[in-house]
Image 1 (cartoon, rainbow, N blue to C red):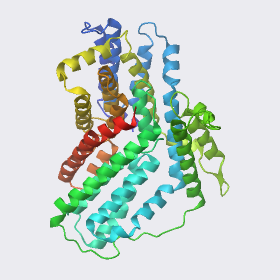
Image 2 (image 1 turned 30 degrees about the vertical axis):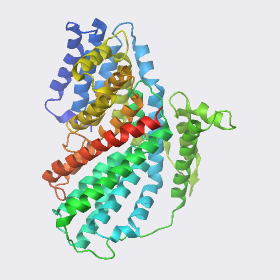
Image 3 (image 1 turned 90 degrees about the horizontal axis):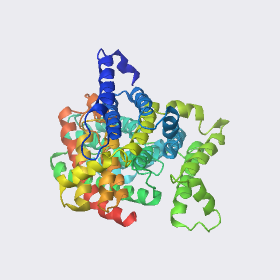
Image 4 (image 1 turned 45 degrees about the vertical axis):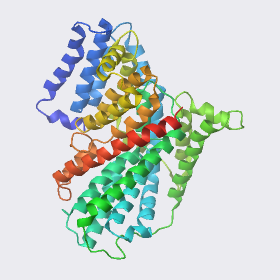
Length: 482
């Protein structure tokens, strides 16, 4: 989609504005603890935020890397090697390939049909909603991408609505469709191979990932979120809804799991065992030392790589379970370049010689006062959820996570908890079309979803997720991440 923006008459004006910010801010007087070198880095970072916001991820990132090579003792070789050689970035690449492989097996469709065929789904309209929300959450977790899941679930739900004889503008229909997007996003971050998870931790300065604690925390949060949504809808919104209910609301054809789906499930379980065992079993146990070695400093680099290779050499009906060439074509390379630039910039922003991180932390300490670690986490989570609904969620992650981690660490708090919760709320760019691809998808689906419904119910969903993160995520996270 970056290429489409070249047709914009303001394209060159925007590019010039980005370069002016990147270069010009560096010549402004230094302030706080920021050094002259830090001002150069700050200018490039601000220019990147604006450029990424315009949607020019590749162009902006490459411009930034080139300009960074002229700052301080940096050279083009050290900058490019540092940016492209980041272990976390390589792990993201293999994790995305793994996600592609799982998606290609069709396991998501099998899981969706299995959930929607449960008997509870035929008990009433909100139980129908519950079935779709669970299916949307579970399938988004499997493929770590809720966009195709939401499209699939919406299509299946349309058939149910027509069968029940309910108006498309009915509140039940509007709420169910919008909340599918909410739980789709929260479900996307459950699995330990989620690229969004690895991006978040990479921006946190390479903080080690406890995959077991992450998966347990995200699973609990999603269960609580869906339960709260169901209770609120059933007892608050449900009183005025009386559609025609039959005993056969959702018809799915129960099919047997095929060979590709079985292999997908096998590799899913294999990955889970391989990345969880080193966290709970001592390395002296035979075999665990190998898994620990494969994990590396990033917590799973070698594990993801070797399982991707296994998926490529596995043949089903004469074809590879995962075609690596097709997998590479499917990757969002513009986001990959954004991430590699962001990770390199994050290391410079937090470096002592720039003084940027120290200045921000000092300013925030003075502004927030003595509200404690919980108060700081709560403010970052709430404010992050608000801002990500206005600007791109990837841009928000690049701003909130490095600053938030530095702030919490300076107070002696648990940085991993903040990273875990921010990755959830910073995904929820649903209220405005500029917030995320799914936000744009909802606003574009005017045939089924009213704009006022998006503003109202997406806001309610975001508030529920934020409160659950604060009052369930923080205490549970502090227990799990030690």
